[in-house]
Length: 215
Image 1 (cartoon, helix red, strand yellow):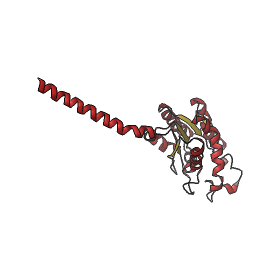
Image 2 (cartoon, one colour):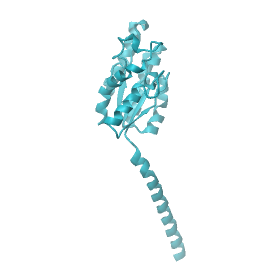
Image 3 (cartoon, one colour):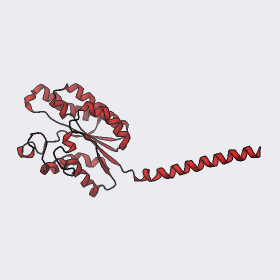
Image 4 (cartoon, helix red, strand yellow):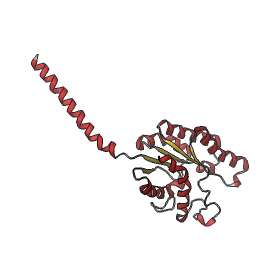
């Protein structure tokens, strides 16, 4: 019996030692995990046509190094992304980054393709619900379509964002490009993507709604 008991006790001790070793290995990772802002957008947030450090998201990260040094920014934006694409991949990004704040800037590519605004709204709704289920605060950034898409379509598209922000009680920026729309020279040759010199204006525009979420 003593031999059996001794062997059992040795196995238990080894198990405890392995558990403690694994716990110690995990502690630095947990200690180093900073609260995160996850930006989930399209080319307007991915910095299309710009250097890596020139886009409004990169400028936001630079500002946060000074004002909120315990935070980090993860930019998961992809040029050409639609709300359907975003809805399909947000769960994986939430699991990977564990964000405290999720910034959703999607829908422009849906509109430019003339996709049904109801479907765009459903996809955005799904992303917001996923983010909130992950205990993250949400900042929804809206877009608008050019008037040549017709009043009915442009109105339905724009109203999606206000409706969802109200429904879910999210922070809200009605139109990302509002500070620069009157300046034709603020855009690249494609007339769609802002140039580097105005990215600071976009950062400041978003910052008004983002900063309160960092508390």
